[in-house]
Image 1: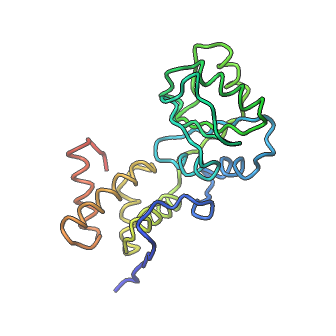
Image 2: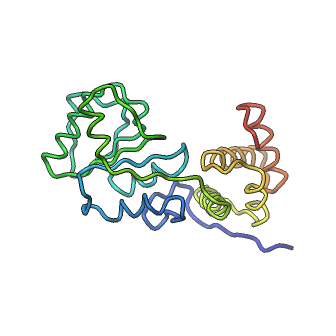
Amino acid sequence: MSEQLTLDFPARQAFGRADFWVAPCNQEAIAWIDRYPDWPTHALLIYGEAGSGKTHLAAIFSDERVEAKDLDEDFIPKGEKIVVENLEELQDEKALFHLFNRMHESGGGLLMTAQKVPQFKLPDLQSRIGMTPKAEIQMPDDQTIMSVCAKMFSDKQAAVDPSVLTYIVTRVPRSFDAVRKVVNMADELSLAQSRRITIYLIKEAIEKLAQNEGFNG
């Protein structure tokens, strides 16, 4: 019998600094977070695909986070550091421009996240984004995918065999978001059917995602 990987953690998402898996694909981004406040400017943009770990980095940086779509010109940050997430959903460019200025004047830190470097119509805002340091979270390698997968199962207090992790790595696109979807679906099926998370259940989860979302496993 293969060795069981026992993951005995509370059912929660672990967003502490010690819980962040540092790998070649994200080491530049976490290095920037660790350097604060020793930044050349008061702002930083971290970008990468959905599920790549941007929210985890945001949580490490600051407890105060706001969705870009919710920003308006009256928004005033409460603390020294703030995160604006999902810049691709920004609706009020002047609001982000004013926040840039407020954080600069206060000497605070502004972290922004996006799936790719945004392009804005407001010239002054585009100029500021252009001068802002940027860190890209790149596509992960197989070992990183396996480690992230193990962490996601541990967040759900699930015990999985290492062979299950290997199967996921070989069957799922090299994407944090794809792994997240498979882990969530497997957890749902496991709870609904009172079954252990096995290779057979993972296969079922991938098939279900393919039917529901056109997921290409």
